[in-house]
Length: 265
Length: 348
Image 1 (cartoon, helix red, strand yellow):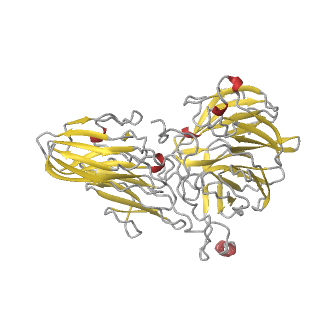
Image 2 (image 1 turned 45 degrees about the horizontal axis):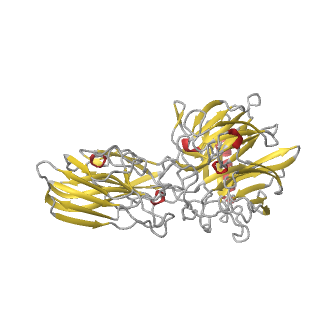
Image 3 (image 1 turned 180 degrees about the horizontal axis):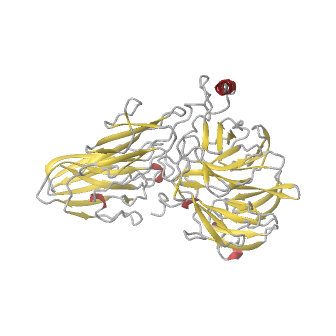
């Protein structure tokens, strides 16, 4: 008897529910609004031995998926259940899915392999006093910055950043990576160009693509192929000298924020 | 270097993003089978993005800063668009009337009931004034920068964001975009006291954005004031004595709005979000515990400490104020949302 009553009740509730969800509802429907992208953190973004990556989005019944090859995750990708430990550098991407909400944007995390540390670095220009990082070694301290420009791993310049790095025993350096922040709303732009002078002989110049309007804050890097034994290397990183037409500060100079210079073996 | 203003610790809502609100302008899918519900525990809502949408050339809005419900049950919206600073709706979202063309920095809106008559207090941070008006817009009096306190040397230092009024008509003003003082006046607008100021000490503020008279405990009435940049709600006695801080980690709370025993807040944005437009709604119960966060993480306490709150769905952009009507439904006014009208949340 109790079961019968329950089933009648259930039927009436269900039919009632059907009647009260007309297709022309004024309310927001399933799959109309997106989920916020997952929060992804790593114990370090420079890998010495292993690094643990944690992804989170505190939304009930959400499912997170990830890839490790730079591609956008789908619901067929690996499902994120618990923090993952990785040994390999690369681009790790996370995306959130839910029956009620549209999938999130993808959060990507780039992991770098630990490089060769110079034994000395001489600065010819100084960081702005407001954004000194943790001192003159900030860019070679094996610690990356976060998306928050106030993170102390960022050194901020409003003019040329110029330093010379010295290495013991002339190691073979395959390439160099300069990490920088793009956060156009905070007037932080990619460098315009990087010029390096190898062993006081060979000069290389890398021009950097400009930031675009509406770009969300992101961590970027400049990759500089070297492929030489290096005793010392002079590095000039030029800030964007004129903010573009679309920016509220057009014509003024932009900030350059760098976190790490990695010299790859 | 003087001209480089960003990045810097500024309190005012920052630069405008060009992105449009998700779904605000879009048609609803005919095949969608289900209304979604946001919020947690006792406070859950369906979302109506079409409420109050008006002809944008006839009745435009810029930022929708604050809303109140008047004694007639009408919903009064304050915007900094000087074609019509005040827009009055009925609860269904139908336009009743508009007024006001002289409030370029229209920010704070408080309803004052005096012997059965409604008045409004408008704070205008560009005029550096508080203006008391009748409900249909006639100016009753103005309060200017309180230079006589000695805390201000020039008029422009005073950028008031909010007011609140006690039963005896006393007015408290929060200078949330200025020097972070709270000034206390009698019902005629005569200065009685000043306290607060900029800083991170107990009795100080970073972005004293909102203020609210809390008389839920009628024996111990007090003031609730937000320190938005600090993600804190602070309680003071009516004489300006600091009483307590209630932390809301991750939430940039705009102003406290007391409705019955609960406190409602628009949260401008999530502290550590990638996107700037990462706001949500926060609701506290009579014990000042967070019980629901529509559009964000479910509140959770461990050892009496509230975990970080953050946006989980990209529904709201920059909520700036909430108004709870006599049906328990909520209206959300947003700053920097692409000139959109308020969103209505229907309690379920």
